[in-house]
Length: 440
Ligand code: SAH
Ligand code: SF4
Ligand code: F3S
Image (cartoon, rainbow, N blue to C red; front, side, top):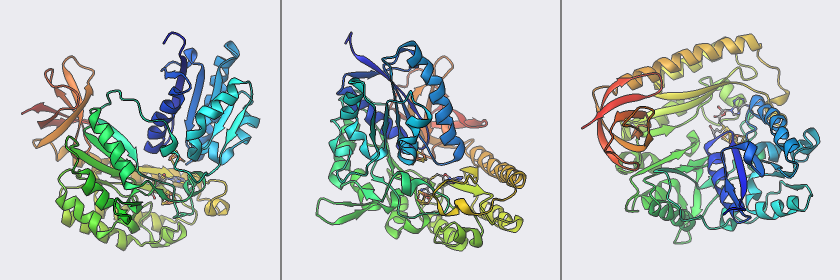
């Protein structure tokens, strides 16, 4: 393919963007593009962007400033912006950075080949519609190439929850679930190409309600049980979930579905009922804790993960103490925490901010507690025997890196093990973000 055009993609934000970037690369494959990891060598530079916090959105503009240089050197280079900044800011992006040729929102990726053809004629192209059709169904079939052992599969998109701080309902639109047969088809195809672990994705993945083979709406638990029947698929995970959609059946699946891994990301954002209400989370701290207790009853060794926002408008030191108390009560194995970032167009955007130095201080205190818990959870694995799905060679000679059932990265000296194998490993030590062990 001497005359193939080259595509450089840089992905920001959540795992759904990682999945979308793969699918966009495939779609542009039909327009004659192959991917490259060098922007200086690319005919098209595509930034798949995130709008969740102000810093994330601003990063895009500074990166566009840098990418402009490649276009200055070779004017035929096209610059494209996809993802949530594209959806939120649309044509404004081209005004702020005239080097941009193409802007496409997350629901219009199946139209990329047509948009690209427009830019090839020297025009700019913009599409931020929320079309009726299922974009993934209108994307070209995935090429039959071998795949890495762990893959993402988007089953649900969008959000109807409207938390007061969050841009997702505006950038990704209303909640939509993909039909069961399409998910199954894609999962089987992934497994045929070497995938052993699938993480089902959705902004609210446990609100999944796709049309099943019987014409009825299937929930996420039923979908997982069906996927578990696929031979060769060894592990299933899902992310991200909302407390109010954590239904009995899904909790039960954590206890009785062997392929469903003992890890759950269940964000709560705050431990204060007053703040939860101001955030429009629609549940209390006690309700969250009772869901956690039920999950632990079903699967006692589950590793819990969460997201937190500190400094949400109206948060006092007392509210923050409630968050610390909740974190102590749950005892997370891993978690993400952020300082509140005001997002234009969201309900909380007009509210008075917490003093920024106070918010910074709270974030530091919360992160200290969370990292203590993470460390303890990792240390608790030392001496235990775990299953590791090996994904790639490590930095040292003969070393392989994989993930445990609990999603810990594990480094092992294992020259005879190949990618995609699941082997038992005795954990021997824990370092800041990973474990080390030896093959049994
Ligand atoms: N659907 C998921 C979250 C998706 S956004 C849920 O309901 O929990 C990922 C995380 O980004 C959120 O959990 C939240 O912790 C953080 N986040 C979202 N908007 C934010 C904002 N305006 N400022 C700071 N953090 C934010
Ligand atoms: Fe955003 Fe809330 Fe929807 Fe999560 S549930 S994506 S935080 S609006
Ligand atoms: Fe960011 Fe959009 Fe994901 S705002 S977190 S890329 S849904």
